[in-house]
Image: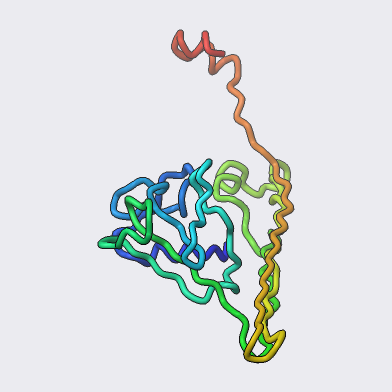
Length: 188
């Protein structure tokens, strides 16, 4: 997903957090993922209402990534678990930039394991593979406005996902329900 916060997985005392989606998605020092203080260029980058990362940053805009897991001073504020700081790139006296697109299409993927196991390709009951297209594209550009005085850097990223798939549902037959236990019969 080109998420710079996924780099947290490389640090010590870090484990994937619960799937609640809070914080940067990782637990540091056994604390809740929302106990991580996320900084962007040294300033607070937390959405305090939902305890998630406030502003997402395109990976091409990241200059430096640092993780503090213990012994951090009071200047870093509210963290109980750890500190994550993302420093963004800055402009230089020469123009530089990137243009990129990462594309994922279902034509290059196989069917889901469950679909292959439940519906072998006999030609009649075969379920067609779902359609999935994911485009993540963007650019970054930096350079001088006034040489040695005023510099700029700008980065933007877009994500487009289009998908359609068949959903399989197993429905118990009346014979199966009749042969099952009483609570199961009352459920159906």
